[in-house]
Each structure stands twice: as C-alpha cells, then as structure tokens.
Image 1 (cartoon, rainbow, N blue to C red):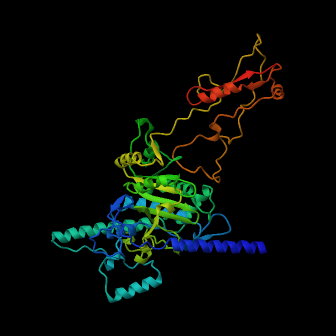
Image 2: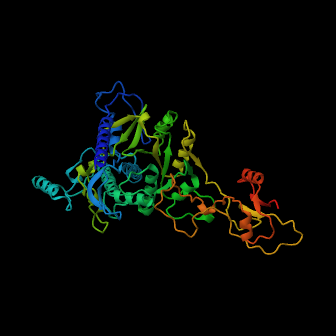
Image 3: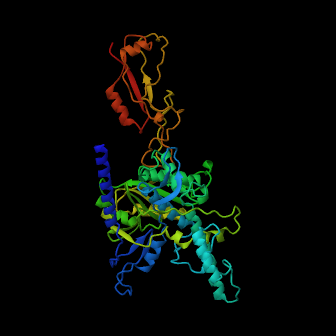
Amino acid sequence: MNGTRAVKTASSKSSFLDKAARYLFDADATPDRCPDDIWLLGVRHSGWVTNTVDDQDHWPPQFYADFTTRVWCTYRRDFDPIRDGGSKGWTSDAGWGCMLRTGQSLLANALLTIHVGRDWRKPPAPRSPSFFLPSPTSSPKNTHRRKHSASSTPSPPPFSPTTTSNSTSSASQDDHTRSRTRHAAYVRLLTWFLDTPAPEAPFSVHRMALAGKDLGTEVGMWFGPSIAAGAIKTLVHAFPACGLGLSVATDGVLYQTSVFEASHTSLPDSDSGSLSWGDRPVLLLLGLRLGLDGVNPIYHETIKQLYTFPQSVGIAGGRPSSSYYFVGSQAEGLFYLDPHHSRPAVPLRLPAKTDDGAEQYYASAYTSAELQTFHCDKVRKMPISGLDPSMLVGFLCRDADEWADFRRRVVELPRAIFSVQEEPPSWPSMDLGGDEDDDALALESLASSEPDPPAAVAVAPPLSPSAPSALAPLNTSVAPRPAFDDVTSPTPSEFPPTPQRVSSDDSGRSGVVGKGRLSITMEGFRNRLRAFGRSRTSLALTEGDR
C-alpha cells in the first residue's frame, strides 16, 4: 500500500514538474526585432526593419497573418468515446495524443494548401453579418443570442449579389464570391478533423487512434513519428476524396517510382513504359532521427533550410508528452504550434443529404469562436537546439515541376539527412527450388566419389530458420518498422536460410548412404558471402572426412 502511494506521489510530482516546465517553456514569444527573414512553410516574410512604424510588441503583419492562418490541432475533451474493444472509452486525448495532434496539423495544412490555397489568409473577424448565419443545428445558447441580434437588426439574404453596372462593384463581387467559396472549402476541410467516429470525419482522433492500434500502439499510448506516419497513410488511402496521394520514405530514402505511383488516383498502367506524374498531389513523409538526446548541431542549417522549400508543410515530433508542430524558422529559432491545450470538442453538423446549398451551409454552420479554436494567435518560438531528434518531416508536391524542384533542393542541402533515388533496389529471388539456371541462393551437393550411382536418397526439407509461412496471416498487432513506404519489402521467408551443420546422426536418419557426413567448408562459405549480390551465389556442401 505504501509502495503504491509512493508511486502515485512520484507520478504526481513528475506531472507537476512537466507542467511547470511546459508553462515556462511555452511562454508567448516576444518580438525580438530580429532583422533576419522569416521562412514559414516555404513562404518568406521580412523580419523587423529599422524604419517600421510598428513598435516592438508586434510581429511583422504579413508573417502574423500567415502564422495565425495555419491549422492548429490540439487536445480535445468531451467527445464521443473511442471504442477500442476495451472496457475504457476514451473521451479525451489529453496526456497521450500530442503526437497524434501534431500529425493531424501537418496533414491539415497540406490539405489546406491543396483545397484553399497557400496564399489564403483567415479573416481576423467576420466581415459581415451574413458571413456567419444562424444555423438550425447550433446550440440553444448560441441560437438564442443570434435570434436576439437578428430581431433587432434584420440580416440580408445570405450571399445575395448586388445588381450594379459599375465595373468596380462587379470586380468586388467576384472577389467576394471567391472569398466565400474558399471559406466554405476551408470549413469543410476542418470538419474532416472533428472528433467523432462518424465517417464524415475521416481524420478524426478516433480514426487516428484506431489506425495506430492496428500498427501496434494501443489507444491511450503515445504515438511515435513512425506510427503517426503509418496512421496518416492508412487514413489518406481510405479517403481518396481528399485528393491526396501519400508516400512514406523507407530508411530515409524517397523513391521516385513510389512517388509517381502515389500521384495516380487509379493504378498506373504497367505496360505503358516508365512512370510519370499522375493526376493528384503527393504528401511526402519522412521519419528521421538526427541525434541521441538532441539534434546534432551539424544538421541545424539543414533543418532551417527545409523551411525555404516551397513544398514544406512542417515538422511534427518530439518526446512523449512534448510533441510540437514546427512551422517556420528565423535565425537560430523555430516557430511552432503547441498541441498541449485542451478544449471542448466541436460537434459535427452535417448538411442535408443533397449537395444543393452545401457551400452556403458550410459558410454558416460553425461560429467564428468555434473556428478560432483551430488557430493560434500567440506566436511561440524556441531555439533550434531545443528540437528533439525524433521527428516527422513533411513535404507536398502538387505536380511534376514541384517534384523536380524538390529533388534539386534536396541535393543542395548543406548536410544530407535523407535522399531521393529513382527506384528501390532489386533484390535477387530467394527461390530454393534448386533450378540450375536460377540466380537464387541454392544448396548444392557434390557428386559422390563412388563409381556407381548412389541409391535413392530421401531429401530432407531445406535447412532454414523458423520464419512465418507465406500462408500465415500477417500479425498487424506487432509494431512495424520505423518507416513506411509503398514499396513492398521482402518477406522473412524470402531471405536465404541460415546454413546449419548436419551431424552424422542426422545423416543416418535421413537415409544418406555411406559413413560420411556433410559439413560446410568455411572458406568456401566466406567466398560465397563476398560474392553475394554481385554474381550467382551458391553454397557448396562438401563430403566430410570418412
């Protein structure tokens, strides 16, 4: 009993220290009048200039508008339980879902670039009473407040165009229509990340957590970057309507063939020759570790340069309970979004089954206060030396030109932290059938020195370590390799068997004629190992001493 109480006390003290450290570490960054350029997900913003009229308490306005537009996914509470088959139904991800949320943020900002545009900026406040209209599915409190406001000042019909012959007014109306369309697309995109098990929210915390469970991480446990990448890959493939392909690096290597395959909505024709870019953008995910306790300083310049890539969608990662979403860099600092802020879940409000008026619906279904919970208006900045070495790096290539530009920029990095190759290596076939014309590793026995042909020999099964059979189902509860890719790796049964010695007793039981026993000549084995992968390989079994 005393031991349990001591463990609880130590745990509470550790939790208190973590919270205290986070409170001090995550304090709002004060504009430091740094004159260096700011790079925010591939967009350059000017730093502080000496002739500015703004005082020191304000960030450069263009940078601040861009920063506050980035989608920010945080802890949520009071959502429908996550049913994972256990007795506990999770109604909050506070304390364990930070890496899950930073992965959501990375994916959401990639989708925002595709469907709304990288140049779009969130309006700081509703532009007109018609921009956020009363919704019949709003909460009673909000509806009552809106009805009271509407009764005192009648609102105009939603998005009703004004008839005018003035060309300036017509251009303004076109801009308003485009702004309305982009706003509706932005709101609809956010509903994909709402915290509900409904299929209309394909990237919810429920689906992310259950996808992680299929990859070996139980619900309620912290995600690592590789599990987060695997969960994102699973959910993106299950929701092709998002208009995004996905390719995950293998051991820090991106393969062009895999990227091209991911860019095709349907499977490309293998008979058409070499692959080319398809019909949709591709999100590239790379799980990297650039040090032990911290990022090796030799990689600092490379990390900062990643934010100058037009294809950058940021870096998600960190230690358990301290994962952040890093969106930009300036001098020796990184700007980031902190998911460790718990907020009430925003309910999903579905439009009518018909698509008529869907744009108008999404433009008015959620209040500005609800939408603001997906954006951070407080800038946070930390030294690059505080970055955790375990991270998930993301890039978005929308077409073949952006992919070619991305490859060029990778080659120009100060230090290589990943690479791009044309295609995966071709591993030799591991068929043990003994075909003389096969390039696989085979076990060969030399002919007997007896002049007469030996009697029939009962051939024993090939010697191999225990491995999953090709017919055995894959156990998805086992944690996968640290990286994921579209390229299928060889199964364990395809690797060459480990050579084993055969004793004389085993030879006798197998029906081998004669007193000899088979053994492996070590020198020949070494020679074969040196030649493996460069030429035909065979392992000779020589006749032992009589």
